[in-house]
Image (cartoon, rainbow, N blue to C red; front, side):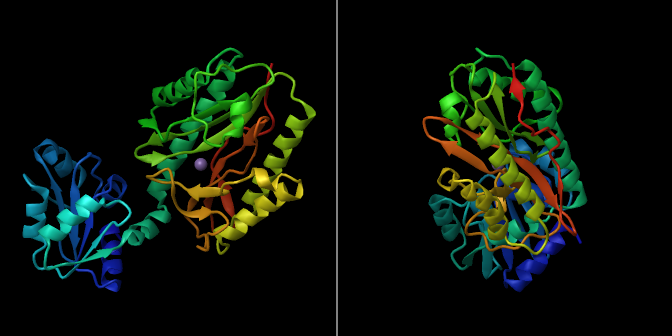
Length: 352
Ligand SMILES: [Mn+2]
């Protein structure tokens, strides 16, 4: 079944006559269009891609299942095309309040129905083609990690290391970085989201690198923590606990289990070791066209994992004024467990 057929089935279940999609990821997922400005209007019979002069040629080539409509004013075109609709879905998590007012004004007779979950549900199950792109994105990150192990030295700044990671991935075919890289060394490594700073790496530092590539629209996400010089006993201890929790989380991944249950397995190991209060974020999140998708692995996630979902497993321990460790892999849920996609080594790596 094509994605259009799938979304129309869901639209019928929700009694929608039309669905308006404007977020870049959903637009791309449904139509193939990668430009930065367009709206999709999907009805039960028709599929329109509304865009302006700059994108007509690109949209026609990339979105063969959509009728490309050249607009001068987006909302007056919508008024024209959706005049017969009674219930129209829109993306409540993406639409700004100003956009919403414009939608209401251009479709006064329409009931606007918030419907982000329809697409989120479809997108959570990756098909073979998507998985192939994700594997490539993961490989770009794995290769960049191998490269950075040869590159890093005491005295380099976190920003230099972040730049080198991105450069390595783009040189090998990534279209970009999947988010602002976290490169946090020494005391800064206790900040789970410490983006790269001008701080120089010092002997004795932990260095946490959380990074990823975009390949044909699909993201990867990996974290590794390495150590400069001979680690202290405590550095060994913390690293081993996080690694044990991470492996236990992976071992728990399988269809039919909830995100909350997987989180509890890894969290339990860290808590038992006495560091529960230093692991203050969720265990993982799904990844696809967006770096953060659902379902998640965290304390509250009731959604059930299914084959084809791609998810991160990333426990950490962060001790203020000391430092921190996080280890993150990506895995795909299979029929009876999971396959870990990330291949980069995760035993404790010491840079002399
Ligand atoms: Mn992540």
